[in-house]
Image (cartoon, rainbow, N blue to C red; front, top):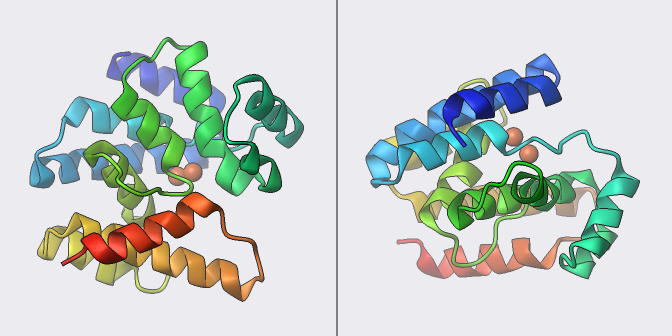
Length: 189
Ligand SMILES: [Fe+2]
Ligand SMILES: [Fe+2]
């Protein structure tokens, strides 16, 4: 898929605010691609498309988990985790995106996982630090990325913050997120 088509697909599907967020994630991801020597086109496409399924109906998402034989554990979670894996399935089935790096980046932006590829890590982090984000600690992550150029430490710090937030709400933590925390705790320098 080309940039122009991806922009059209996202613009037609998403509310304006979410589309604008997706544009900022894509731009942030391209900026990061330069620092970390990643493919800019793949970063742009994954960024623009990552939230495609953000507002899909939950019951339909559960159907897709079953018909596409996705991790059955996903049935224990809601949109916050599901919209990544579901968007990746749609990109593959509906828009013929076959690039595994793009599909994995879209799929795992909601959970992280161990041993992520470079595009996956960039989208995961860009989603958290795009310029309009203002959550506590976000400037520290921006410095880890643009100052220290330490992508693995950024993934770890974001995952730690996400898990803290979930624990404060007594939420259950998806196993891929826990594996992400442990893996990047070891990987970070
Ligand atoms: Fe998302
Ligand atoms: Fe997002």
